[in-house]
Length: 226
Image 1 (tube, rainbow, N blue to C red):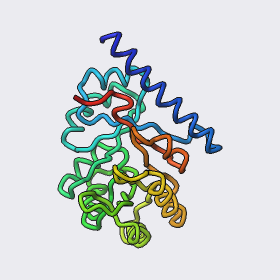
Image 2: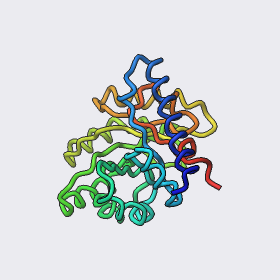
Image 3: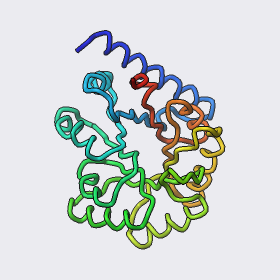
Image 4: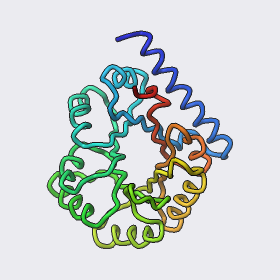
């Protein structure tokens, strides 16, 4: 493997972890309470291998089929690997998603819940589930509207028996992220949801200040995609 690339990736990861630690300290939190999720979508194999060599074991992917090609053959080779689906999930891909992912962060509609419930039975396994909240109420984005989040979480628990581990959001790019992170934290608190997946390369340290328990970082780790 290219030693220069190994150094570049390991250094970038160290820098991100240091920023997470600094933000956690400012918030009076332990850095260990924040999981770094490396967003590996569309990354070439050599950068994935370099990130694995640097010690990273939690990765986020947007598409089921792309993730299958990237990770199925790496499962056996890397102990402790955790895969998170952080992109929208089509109901007809629920079975494949359940088979591959340890965490599904984009539950946002009843039809998908039904497909996942069936897939859980077929697969004999239950990935951890997050509800995606569309905090900016953007038409082009997936996610439950904030005003509907309480009822949706309650329905997932009542009707499907789902243990909702966390909430996830992607704030509007043109707005300050802080208020959106604060809103997600407020919804989680009143619904007894423990985990918050929020913050990306441009704002993950801000997310930590608002209580993020995982941050989804791509370009700050791997470099900007060409």
